[in-house]
Image (tube, rainbow, N blue to C red; front, top):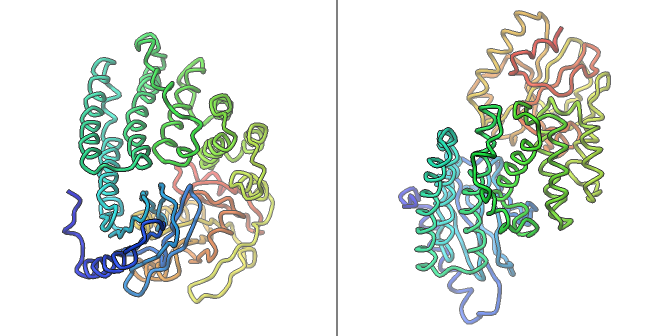
Length: 468
């Protein structure tokens, strides 16, 4: 069921050694909270993974020469954790003294994950449920075209089947209440998200509200949701749910559903709705951060960042300078037209440091790329050729955001010669100083090196207007 045939012989040997270590270390002491976490990564994207809780890094675990990692925790509080091998991440739950190994292949990250060791069965079940929900999310759009009765029958049937399987596994494995909280939440929020999206999707298509077509008790499930439970705040199923819920609620307040969902007005409405729903200060701040990040993620919205952030700052009590939304707002202000780019750490393929503000004497387009999206490279190359043909002399600078080894390997493989190739050697500085939030970000500079457009997208059909 979990693809155990994918385990390599090396991994099996590592697992055997791991099992012996765990058995020896746990003998005779039932009162400690020791735990182990290790594994092997096929086709790694970097030389480390992050072990996290609530989106905060607890440990950075280095890969060895065989792409394996291992760490012992002298005391690990039972609960939900995540491991990140950027740009990927996944959850793992530790009960007391659980000791887990995981096998990962980055070429199909989620599908490849297999847990072994103490605590493996519940985590493999959680992964199976995750993959079923993801398949659901990617293939269920047709159900939103159904009439209300057919839609309800369809999603209720799927939900009940998964609940039955969940109850069966819960009885068989007798897992802890702590784990049950998260696995049941994953089931419920996948179901609730569909219910939130249905009125929203139907209204978007027709331009009309369908409140009269759904029963008065349609949203009663909201009353049972623990909106202010801090354990849910950073849990992806909950984040996805409250995002679509607030979209639905904001749309229902609009006179027409034809208004695009990324308008300033509608996103300020979402902030105010969140302020009224979430009472716990820490939870509310995190929800506001999520809403703000989603809005500012779209480059075209950055032009409204001052008005949007004014509302955000009125509602959020998180004034920590490390707050990502605060940093994005500050950075956006430094990327205004006519300013010079803030200095960041860039290197060329010979590891020489490069000052981006020196040597600009033509109109210049700066774009970003990663080996995680290699298919995009050919499309970019073709777009560069078209732009040069139409607009004449333009310099292109490609900034890679991978680790050095991965960057150089991909350059050799793809012969990237249509742009000056640089790498951001400090990704955090790039994010903080250039408000970098997504890979298709593009910056346009004037011939004197000043900023012409700080937030654009090279692949937009109307990108050429920034080159006139």
